[in-house]
Each structure stands twice: as structure tokens, then as C-alpha cells.
Length: 409
Ligand code: NAD
Image (tube, rainbow, N blue to C red):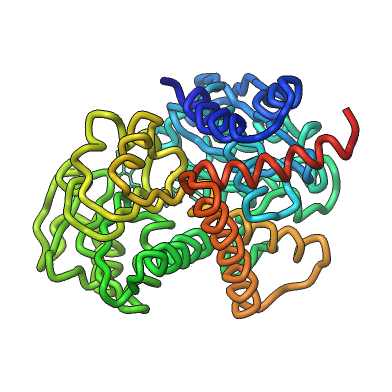
């Protein structure tokens, strides 16, 4: 099953429980606009190179399109459409006034110099500037893009349209970025862990955690979990995993990461494989690296009580059915990792108002949004006797469907 098909499987499953006409279902499933561009640049050695860029705009009935731009060899129409759709449902679940979009450039940024990357990024914005804008479509960082690329994008867009800091979010703090944005997705995941544990009458202090990945999201989640007394037994990165049954020292691990650029060979922990990590016995398993991690081939061997989907699309539908049968509580990506887009909304609000919030205000507002969204999903899942994923989609579809009809068809 391909990525967009998997997203639509979940969407249709929720739609089956709702009273929606075929026409509305079609409108909500298909992207509103698909943009594909050719990006030609000169490489440092004088040769020419071509890349393909995408911007898929799924739905804007609740507000401007919103979603990341990723630079990766797997970027294509299918993945971008799947992720754009997830953004529509994610912004709706946490009730921020945005729609959904996604895109990026099919490239391997590790093979490009910084100046080549800058040229690709700027050329991409030249190609799509007329379909984005601070009240139209607001890109953000995603896999292999960060504040650096957002700064180039803001600058390039401003050359054409004038001063416009709200054109992208996830900007550097010194260039109209928002304090708290960097930690926001990890903080949101930590809050969701706490809420999910409460539903099983458990607390952070007596829970164990395993994370796949140790990048932006997982490293912040691990630090918040550590501060609130939770024990992280294992984490991984692209090079492999590390495990200590007594729990990892997160502060020392952060330093180890800084010094070595990888988690492996961390003193006091054993190196393990990705497969071993996913099968560890723990309370909370948090995939925070890639999509399509849980499949029908490994779902029976996962040994946790709760899965917090920090990554986008980590669970394939067959695995999701197995988790449901096994009573593993799966908190879906469109809720678990929505702290990032919630805080992007705060950044955009600050840019539009030319006013900066304190970190404390950002954290307070973020915590409120995440807790409110979790409670709504939890209540609906209980009352309708459906999974958290189906409940989250029902809430999101209800909100997007309502604005679509109110606007008139
Ligand atoms: P990141 O690039 O900072 O970190 C990714 C981590 O995954 C790194 O530790 C990397 O080494 C590891 N990784 C990469 N390939 C791997 C592999 N084959 N096996 C195991 N580990 C591998 O990315 P991030 O910002 O932490 O994002 C992680 C996930 O969360 C992504 O799926 C992203 O789409 C999703 N997400 C991120 C945000 C955000 O605000 N950063 C928001 C929503 C969703």
C-alpha cells in the first residue's frame, strides 16, 4: 500500500461512521492543487543539475494551507499528497486556523554543498512564489530542512513580494522565529505521553520509554520525559540504537550526541539494531524517525502498551488493525506530533502582529491546545468505542467538512 492510499484508508474508515455524501467525501480526500516544478541550478563545478520540486495543497477551508518542505530522495507526488492530507487533519484536530499542504524537493542534500543547497532553495521559491504567501500557504521545515532554509525562503519571497516574515515558520530566533518552536513537537509528544499514561492509571514516574530516532523531536521529548521522572531505556538514529535496562542518562547522551554526531557507542549502554529496539519491552514506544515503520511483519512482535506516533505515518493500516486487536493504545500522528504546527501557528501570529511572546506564554498556550485536543479525542474514542486514530479523524473531518459546506460548494 502506498503512502497516500494508507492515509486515505484511515480517512475512509472514519468517514464510514459519519453521514457524508459521496461528493463531500471526494472533496475531502483529493488535494485541491498539485504543483510540480523543475529546478535547474549550476553546481559548484560549473555543471548543470535538475531537480523536481512539489507543493501539494490539500485543503484550505479552515485557513491558509500549512505544512513542511522536505529535501529527500523519497519526495514524490504520492508522499507529498499523503503528508499534505495529514496536515489538513492535524491542524483541524488541534483546532488551529490552517489547512494542509506539504512538499519539497527530490534531492539528497548530503551530496550538495551549502551554496548549492541555497541556490536550489531560492530557485524553488522563485518557481512556487505565486502559489504561496502569508495568507495563502505557509511552508515550514521538515526532513532535512531547518531554520537555515526557512531564512533563505523568507528572503527570496521578500525580494519578490516585500517584507513578509509570516511567509514561512520555523525561522531562526534572530530572524522572526518564535521562542519554543524548536522544542514544541517534542514537548507536545511528552504531554501526550503523560495524558495517555493517565488513561491507563499510570504516571511518568513509573513508566519506561523507547524511541526510534534521536533528532529534534525525540531528543526534546526525552529531555521533558527525563525532567518529569520517566525512564528512557533506548533510542536510535540512522546508525543504530543504544539500550540500558536501567535507563539512559539523557543529559550525558545529549553531550555524547554533540561530540560524536551519533547516539551509538554511548558509554554505559549496549549498541542494538533498529529491529531489536522496536521489539523492546516498554510502556511507551515512540517512533520519531520515519514513516512506514510498523507493518504486518513486525506488529505482532511489538512489546509496549502505548505507541505515540511522533513521526508522520509510522503505522501501516495492517499493523494498525493488529495493534487494535492487541489493545495497544496508538495515539495517531495527527494528534501526537501536532505540537509543531500549533507552535508554528503561534510564530505566524507573532509575525502578523510584529510582537514576540515569551517562552512561558508559548509553553502555556501549547500545553492548553494539546491537552484540550487529547481530551476531545479520548472522550470520543470512549463514547463511540473506536480507536484514537478514528476518533481524531472523525473530529477533524467534522471540522473541515463544516467549513467546506459553510463556504458554499
Ligand atoms: P530529525 O531529522 O531531526 O531527526 C530524525 C532522526 O531519525 C535522526 O535521529 C535520524 O538519525 C533518525 N533516522 C533517520 N533515518 C533513520 C533510519 N533509517 N532508522 C532509524 N533512525 C533514522 O527529524 P525530526 O524533526 O526529529 O522529525 C522526526 C519525525 O517527526 C519525522 O517523521 C517528521 O516528519 C516528524 N515530525 C517532525 C516535526 C518537527 O517539528 N520537527 C513535526 C511533526 C512531525
